[in-house]
Length: 413
Image (cartoon, rainbow, N blue to C red; front, side, top):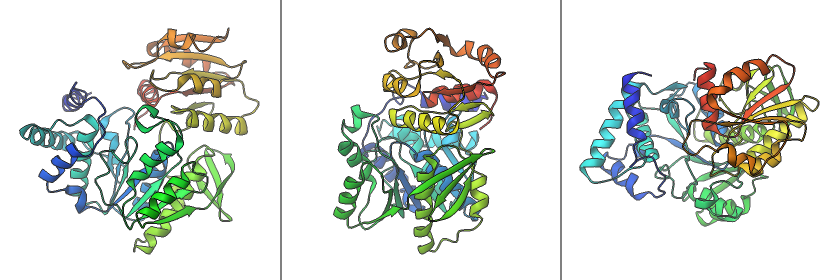
């Protein structure tokens, strides 16, 4: 890790920044002082509980392959903060990152504005995309939508992916409350896209109606097969091949294709679609590290259910060995109930995070003669032995864990 990036990381993880404070007042003040760079670029806003990142990545790759200079702002990162801010698949450099970070922090300090980590990153992303004159930037919501720092943009299009329970302590304890927060990204007289099976569709419809905005419902998708690393997905009678695994990717692709229709109406020229779908790389979302090893976030019950259903459909007879780690503030007990069968072997991992579940946390909710408890530094030795067999190995439970696994295994982002 070089000196410049070390300083970037230290700055963003300082005590005053490393927290969550929803609201638009602070970020709006700083952006006003910067002459609102977010208003000088075309944007697409994406909210939802699960699927935001994959949907963003698919759409960004299609626009990139169509010849557009395409910004992409996502979270969280897996190994480096730079991953969150990309232009045409290339991460922001440490140099550009450090220069913009210093400018934002200096400006905020001079005006007595205390920004959180995510607010700083959001402002840096808007400045970078504006300075680099992107043709369009895809902006993924960090948390919720209505009060998320990204919700200062006036996008040409809004997309809301699947809605389920996550961050209930901040977004509410019912689907209706959570959907209301997600639908808070819908702007007056805009266009919003959602799937027909979205659990919050009624709220999205009502919000769009109140905003006099147009709601487009994406066509239902069917995942037909998964062969040689490629999923075949049928939408409107056509088969699309995409370099992503998981039945839920059908819904994500359907949202993207409906978005492409809207973009075409707005003058965008889309080409090389098939090539783009085969060129997508989105790590730690049902990613195959080897033929028998899958890495996935699966950090909430909905994502865990999607993972379990996909495994049951594609590998029904395979014996499963799990490496599972979770954050204490997540619904890890429910995830465990969804994912594991009695005959599965489970290695619970304590990873490098102050909020990582301890061994005692897992022991309270899961008991089996096939359950073991290790820390992240023991992982490599055990993993190297296990992957030599014929069993299916799944590493999941947290994107923070996934990032550390990728770093340990030498995968480059």
